[in-house]
Length: 173
Image (tube, rainbow, N blue to C red; front, side, top):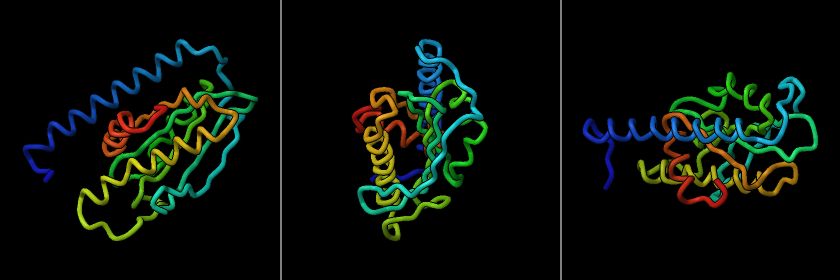
């Protein structure tokens, strides 16, 4: 049984930090090597909606992308524990300006998102969080304007752990 304590927390925090650095490196590498032209971040389309997870959880989601026909690569931004998707406000304009679509959502139990049921422990609540990332990736793959094979995920803290788990379990990221 996994329990977070003073002995296990430092390695997990270090792992989260490493994941953030690796993911940022990959995204910036994609920016440098992209074939699309940067766009004006003020010219964009925005939609806010509730994404439904596989277990019925309603996930408050915001999806923004540059004006134009695309297809656009997509970056999914996942926030820290105790935060919401607004944590990434300063970064979304940068990515949109660089020609990326940006999907941000409130991780279940935070911001405008719900929970499937009252969590019965860490494994039940935290273990189900990657399901919402899988639903977000599926949503992107169903759209025609976006590169389904160019989906990047960046997370901070809790979001980094979800990104790490998702990178090994969700096809397409």
